[in-house]
Length: 327
Image (cartoon, rainbow, N blue to C red; front, side):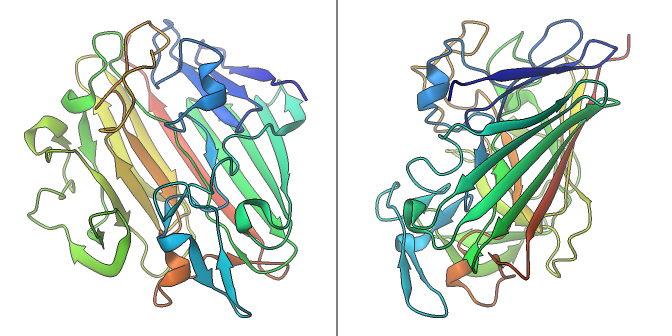
């Protein structure tokens, strides 16, 4: 199956280009043509895409310790693709496979992608039929994610878009302002594996309750931390964070039904890939607010469950509210 792209365009000229490979967001262009998210200059780079730019990642986003977990029957061993650990669903997962485009509705500015992950893929049990629907209306990009599993299996998918609202000026997000309402941060070890404990971010470098410019409190290697917004797991659409670039006037607010989000400032972005404007990427070229289930939940039974099956289908909604500069 050939890789296909679809562009959703609003009347005001805001454009979102999607790809069947990874059910990915290839680009988000403002009406004046400025790119608001990282996008590869070379088309072939999307096939390797080591940074997961714009892709749908899973079956389980983030990390699973030692690439294994114990289910109700035995130990499930998964693909090891980050040292001894399992990252973003394995070597291919959902991000590096070609999805089927099952519907394109230009009247309602919507596109629907489907992929069946078969039993044993990357070590996971059961078949899962995934559906991802994108819709662009009123400067809001909505992503509806669904997974119907044939048996109990962990599912936690997200979109791995890297925002840079000032890429016309420079590929550096340290001058962006960030606001994150969550008050709890998941603690991790030296290999970015969650320990199972949480810490209050109040009055620490991780505190973004009020909008702050990143370079005012950026650690040596930036941020790569999970913020827990909804400890009760209510599954309601909530505000996870806002990204603003004062110089350009762009702003993006992130909403999701997930319990929390990974905040990543792109320190490990490879510098041997170019953004669509020809500038080299590299550390801090883009940042992510990735809503998903608690990472490594399969190995911490006091976490909210990320196990889904025939009696409990997976559903997740993400909204990106894009604010354009005042004309």
